[in-house]
Length: 89
Image 1: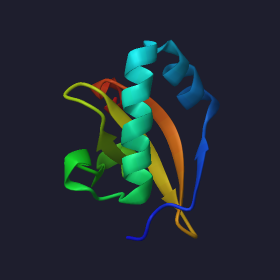
Image 2: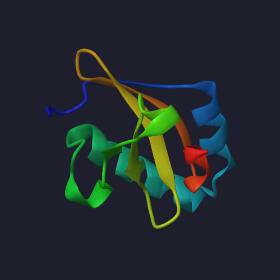
Image 3: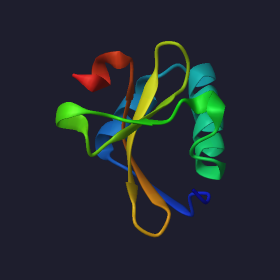
Image 4: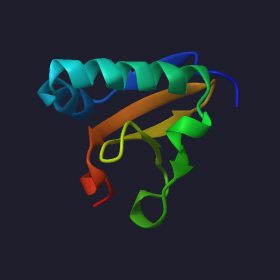
């Protein structure tokens, strides 16, 4: 997949991001930039979800945190949530 040309966030994503410690926010930003340059970089473990979340994708920030997103047309993405595995519930 080509790199992401535009990204959007939901209010919930912004709220969750703002709750994170500043040093962790920097890690998240680096991972998002990596994702936007190469959505399927092996270090991100990007994967499509199943069941009730089958319209969504997830990628890895660290052992505990994931970003929940959806690919849109024209190489765009929308970020819905950043949280622990609780985003899968």
